[in-house]
Structure formats: structure tokens, C-alpha cells
Length: 179
Length: 101
Image (cartoon, rainbow over the protein chains, first blue to last red):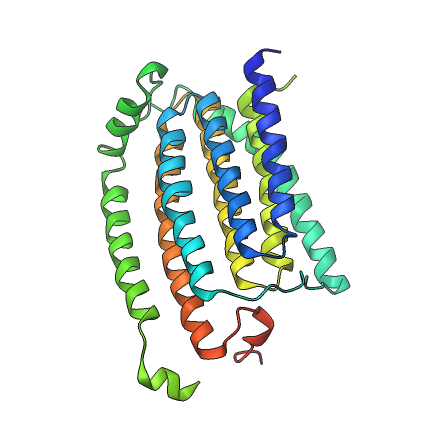
């Protein structure tokens, strides 16, 4: 077992532990800080998986941009501290949840693994194996050829999200009167 | 012994479980949104691991798209939280049951 695998396992275990800690925090801001740490850890895992572009984008976009919006909103709301409250499940809901998780485990380990091994093997001529050292060049080559339409649609989605966020969070007189 | 990307798939599953727990059981909407971020990150880890397992780069491209969707989700969701806080002065899911039948 190489040093890379050991580092990967440590990072993964730490990430899961951080996520578990996050779920039980009282203050949203401390949970957001834990989530930023988790994302930096995930970026390290992406780097170990030779996905260098994913690692850099994870830090810049996720830890740098999305989480800043989260922390900004938390400071804007300035909520008082409160005790951690959890919801409850009825027996039927619990049974259904366990059944769903069991199905997820079976799908993820048996079917999913076989699917990954078979579906993307050499028959898939559209996305051939790319040599790893030029990760960014390969990602860009695929993103702007086969995934060009998805890329353009995503840019429209982001535009719609910007306009939507402004419209939703705008102060409205009628809104305040109804409330 | 599992290889590194296969371990990544298992870590992704564990992270997804924790995120699902957060979304399902926390009553604070801010924590529910943080849970959704964990879910999306778990999916991204699965995409990158699958990309390594199959030797194709598609997973990393899709991972970038998921990241863009996550940014949209955070912007819209947080705007809705601000709007709700103005109307109800609360970010608890229990206080927002107007549509409960």
C-alpha cells in the first residue's frame, strides 16, 4: 500500500468525520467552516485521483465562492444561537429509509461496479483514454466538443439563477404587508 | 485490497449518507442546505472516482457541471432563505408549514 493510498484513506476518513461533526453543530457558521475544510480535503482527494482540474476548481469555486455566499448570508441573518434540534421518523418512514439505503448499497457495490467496468470499456469510442499529465487540456477538449451544448445550457442556467436570486431576495412592499 | 478510486466510491457513499442524514433530520434550513452541499460533493467524488476507474475524462467534465448547478442552487436557495426570514423571522422548517394539508 503506497503512501498515496494511505493519504487518500486518511483524507476520506477525516472528510466523513468532518461531515458527521457538521451535522450536529449548533452554530451555522462553524458548520460552514467545517464544510470548507471538507471541501479542501476533497480537493486533495481529487488531486490524488489525477483530476487536477477538478481539485483546483473545487477550491476556487466551492471553497472560494459558494461557501463565501453561505457565510455571507449567515452573517446577514445574524441568528441567535439555538439548541440542535433533530426531526423524528415514524416506524414506516424508518423502514422505508432503511430499504432505500439497502437498495443503494446493492446498486452501488454490485450493479454499479459491474456497470462501470463494462459500460465505459473500449467500445466507448467517443471518450477514449487520455494520457493523464495533461489533465486540463483533456477536460477542455471534451468539454468544448462533446459537452458543448451542456456547457452552453449551464451558462444560461447560471444567468437565470443570478436574475432569480436578485428577484427573490428583493424587498417588496406587498410582501411585507402579507407577512 | 481496494484500489484508490474504488475507495473513493465507498467514501462517496459514506459522505452521501451523512449528507442525507443532515438534510432529513436537521430542522434548520441553513443546515439542510449545507447537507445538500455535502450530497453534491459526494456525487462529485463518485464522478471523479468513476472517471479514474474507467480511464475516461467524462466524469471530470460532468463534475464541473455539477459544481455549476451547485452554485445556482446555493444562490437561489440562500435568496429564498433571506426572503423567508424577512417574512417569518425564522429559518426553522417547522415554522414554514403553510402548504401542509
